[in-house]
Each structure stands twice: as C-alpha cells, then as structure tokens.
Length: 384
Image 1 (cartoon, rainbow, N blue to C red):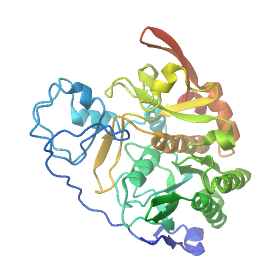
Image 2 (image 1 turned 60 degrees about the horizontal axis):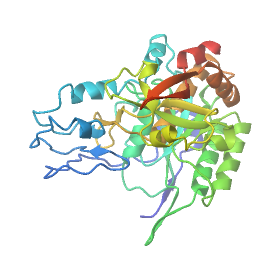
Image 3 (image 1 turned 180 degrees about the horizontal axis):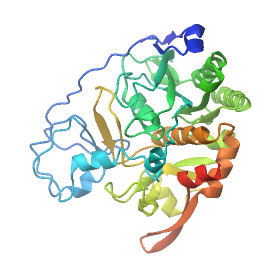
Image 4 (image 1 turned 90 degrees about the horizontal axis):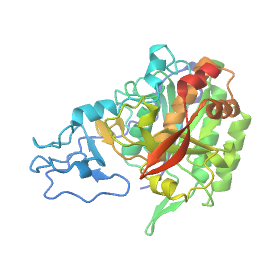
C-alpha cells in the first residue's frame, strides 16, 4: 500500500470550514462463532470483540473475564459469573473518572479549545466525535480504511459520553510512522515530526480563538530513526506554546506519564481509592524495578470504554489499556484547563498537576506502597 498525503486548503482553515480530505471506509466486523476460548493476548487480554460466545458456559470464568475486551457486537451466553453485567461494565467504562464528569456539569467541557490528534486512519462518522471533527488530513498514511486505534483515542479525548473534553474541537492527521516492506514495518519517526510541523503550520492559518493548544500522539520515541527530529519538532511546538503529549513526556517535559488500573472493572471511576498501577506495569512497580517515581504523573488508563472503529454508534471495552489511552486523556484535561485559563502554558500545567495531585498509600500482598502522583482534575483547575 502506497502512503497517501493529502492536505486541506489554507482558506478552509481560515474560514473555519469543516473539511475531510477523504472519508475512510469502514463496515461491519463479524468474527463469527468461537469454537474454543482464545488465550489471553498480551495487549488485548481475553479478546472476544465481535465474537459469538453464546455456546460457552462462562459462569465460572470470572478470572478470565476480569481481563476481558469486548464490544457492542459480542454475543454473550446466558450463564455469566455472578455480578458480571456487560452492559453495566460498558456504561461504567465511559466515565473518564477522577471527577471529570462533575467538571462537565459545571460547564468545563473544553468548549472553544482545539486539540490535534495524530494517529491511524479514522472513522470520521462516529457519534462520539463526528461533531467535533474540524478536519481530516493524511500525511504518509498507509492505511486503506478506518483503524481501531484512531476512534479509540479520539473518543477518549473528546467523546460526547466517554471523553474528557466533549466540546473541544479536533484537528486530525492520519499518519504511518514508517514504511512497509517484505521484512515488515520499518519505523521512521521523521513522519511523526512532519505531522507536528504540519499542525504548527495549520495553526498559522487558524484565527486566534481557534488555534490548536495541544497535540495528542500515542507513540513514544528513544533512539529510533527520526527520534531526534521528533525532539526538535516538539521543541518548535513548545516555542509556539503548543503542548505535545506523547508516551515519552520525560524527554521534553521532565515527567513520566503513566496509566492507572483498577482492582475491579466495576469500581467507581471517580473514587481515587479504587485505582492501582496499570495492568501492564504493575509487576514492575510492586517488585521495585521501576525508577524514581517522584516525577510520575498518573491518569486513568485501564477499564475504559471507547468508540468502535467499524460502526457509527458502537463501543469497545478494554479491561487492560496502554499508554495509548493515557495520552488523549491528558490532552483532554489540558483542554479543560485552557478553557479556564486561556494563558495556560504546558510548564504551568505540569507544575500545578504535581502540586495538586495525590500520593496515597496502597496495600498489596501485605506490603504498603506510596502510589502517585495521581492527577486531581478539580484541584488542578481550582488552582488555575
């Protein structure tokens, strides 16, 4: 598949005209009837999205279902573990958590703030974010149709029912950070740097009140090809007052972004005591293998519901997430803060996030651990 690059005209941006360079194809995703239960995947857990599992007796499979990933099209059996209600779990997972919905009720919704997202090809029509989507460009995009990741991160950032900033505008660039060859994908993060620079260029076309204030890119970088170009592009964004959130925030901003997990998927997302280290890094935390956590900022990650990529109104729920979910969550919160303080800078946001955040003591296998800093959205906004 040849990569596609397609830009929207300067005039469309200047006049605020919503424009999609192309509409990505998407359609029903039916994986059929499962003949046997799949093994747990390292990323997706017990993945039964769009499967028919109605022939199984799952009432004694609570351990498996505690790590489940399912969607609106999963066909369940009558016999499920006591207290396991897929509809309830899906609904609880829509809550961004940590009191964010209470801020929405006060009118702090990201209204008037613009976010940019760089990710895979997007289904532009999902009800969670279709109204928020201001543009859709492609910059070296190899995808032939909508992908799961794009809809997920967009809805976590600005989704109407599951997003942190449900009234923020979104400027979206679909990009592939590398090239496909016979040996597989060869990473080239120069395309990531190019995407950041393109967003900064778009900002020069936008009126002051519409300028993009934060960029969400659910990807990290260390020494890959193009990593230095990304660092330089983020530096240019900082000079322009734009916060670029990646999974490598320690590189340009001096803090590590990490994701929260929950002991029970049905636990109240607003209750800070329900949170624990995220599933993918909890082992390293409890074993003491992790480096100094004094500059680690924790935001919700696991047990999240997000928009599906293959319909206009369906959802997926993942018991385990990755930092891909934490990045748009933090970008959404930054939009809420910018709505409150239009002069906000990334540096002040980071400073206040640590000042107002929470470090608590948690128990695990008879030992006590200091756990934090967990972000406190209400206290952070109050400080601004």
